[in-house]
Length: 251
Length: 235
Ligand SMILES: Nc1ncnc2c1ncn2[C@@H]1O[C@H](COP(=O)(O)OP(=O)(O)OP(=O)(O)O)[C@@H](O)[C@H]1O
Ligand SMILES: [Mg+2]
Image 1: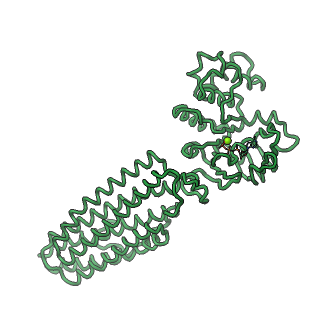
Image 2: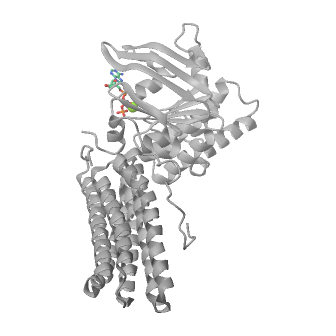
Image 3: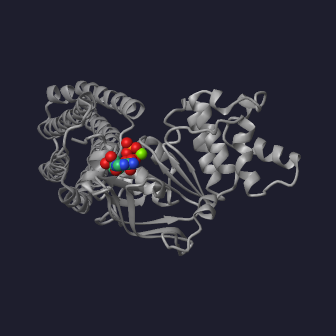
């Protein structure tokens, strides 16, 4: 099943074009990895999928992004509802300047997901457990989230993103600030999450892309050079640019 | 290897080194096979002893390649063509090591033969071994050239080796039947023939690996077969 369909997507920052005619199908309940050298447009593409580029003044997006067959670039799209369905974890951890608990409870509160304090406590606990952070913060739930270490903050943001049970989770280098154990925990979480969510992850670690994803897309200078099963991309890619990139031969 | 060089030079060096060791190991096998055949057909014990001694070198190459492959996988996490290079080297080294062993076994038996062998038999032995030697050479060339089509050619000529093996077996059986005194030598010769055929099989394995290395997919279909072997039912 195709969850997201990008068709002829062009993105400009002012006059500068950042993405060229991107066409990509994202399968439901699968992990899709987006790889490519710095500045090739991965984050830009990710932001197209929940209209986060709207908040950048000079940014304009052309083309269609169909999610569940609905074009989210259509005027009738309710952007708030959209972002509720499409969660995002950013490259840099960005916890709210609130307590650990409030960071998680914020979303479920707005969406009216808990009927009681007890239910909210449960949501907070399971979200933190899933994000492999519970043990480290269970005794400091009411301290500021910004007081956590970088890696802990990132897991807090992951917990926050999954607390509202979005259909799709966009992750922009979620593990770049994490140690190998936390990374493994997040990868395990991603594996678990894909049963109920569709996941798109941007990563600079080829090994991570190979480990966590079923499909991979390779971007270069704003173009989607090749996409297909992760197995194929990492064992026998069709395009020499792809091969040069994943084998570390980029000139 | 036709790819652009790696950004990390030491990685590039390690892959080149692995490749060079496979080539050296392959030539050592070619050399041993040639000498083993020369020793048995010209009844030269000195050459046979060289082959027996040289097997150790081939074994050492296998260990070396194995260590290099483990290091590459652990430290470099090779991907795509590099992954295939690495895995293929490991598999090739194990088939090449077997080829070395079989050449050594032929030479050990050569030392035990005493009678002068009938010309028909020597001719038959020469025919099958020439064909296997050619196959091994083409396989190593296919590796050097990274040529899938050369690998396929080798793969297809396995059939011819099966046929020549059977002809040689028939000669050995004829020799066995001629005189009870031929029993010891004849038995050795049966094994020698079988060993040559097995070298051909290992060579075909290597050809399959080269095809995978180049194409990234497996050579499909049944391996072409000649007439069924008449003496041993191993296959
Ligand atoms: N807010 C912005 N204003 C202007 N140009 C931008 C903006 N964001 C990104 N760009 C440009 O768009 C191109 C794509 O950037 P993007 O952040 O999508 O790359 P990326 O693949 O995510 O890189 P990285 O791996 O470094 O995160 C780059 O040339 C970048 O300079
Ligand atoms: Mg980015």
